[in-house]
Length: 257
Image 1 (spheres, one colour):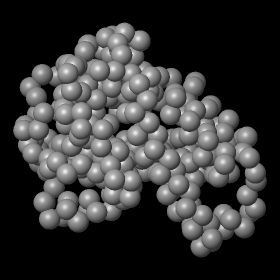
Image 2 (cartoon, helix red, strand yellow; image 1 turned 135 degrees about the vertical axis):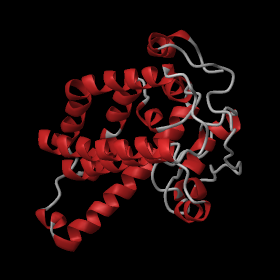
Image 3 (tube, rainbow, N blue to C red; image 1 turned 45 degrees about the horizontal axis):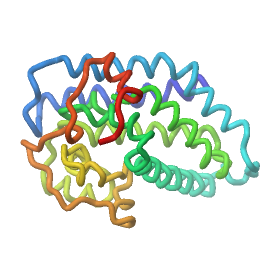
Image 4 (cartoon, rainbow, N blue to C red; image 1 turned 60 degrees about the vertical axis):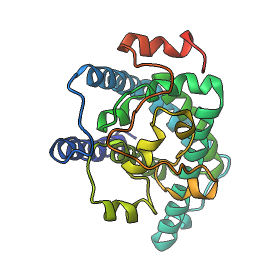
């Protein structure tokens, strides 16, 4: 378990550093001068990092040890094992789509998720800006597909690594060639798609829910027609960002607008 988590974090760390540097060399939108938001974003992230070995990782391990059924060893060998891994990744990504949609549609879940949306600019730091309560709830709810699929811990960790790398990418402020991004966005979520999701207009915020494969928003009619622009206002409609301590208390201090 510890070794899997190490390689997952090493991979994600490499992606983060690469994008963090790239978005300072090739910006898609002017970055804010204040560094206060970075303090807030990384502060929330450090809290999650500190709690993960004590709370989040044991939840995932619990799911792996309490599967509804047991897969035979033949399902993890050769091409069959690769095919099963791909199926697991697709199903887990579909679950993540609907879970994300639930965070926007169910008021008590939105209270947690709104902390992420209060960020008034997007870059790689936004991808790790989540309230600890949301991270814990997501880990618990992800037990449902894990136990029903009888997904091996290896497959789950691979999915989590891909999901984290995807989040870092589509939150990033990296300017991509328009033609390349247009083609890429047909398959996976790109910054041009996800920035619209963070547009400070409720209709756009409640759209573009996909986290890795972009197909889900087309299949379930949740893709926004709005096009990203460099001056697009980012944030949660009708509210402003808060200091770190205020963000920690936000879910219990206010209701969804």
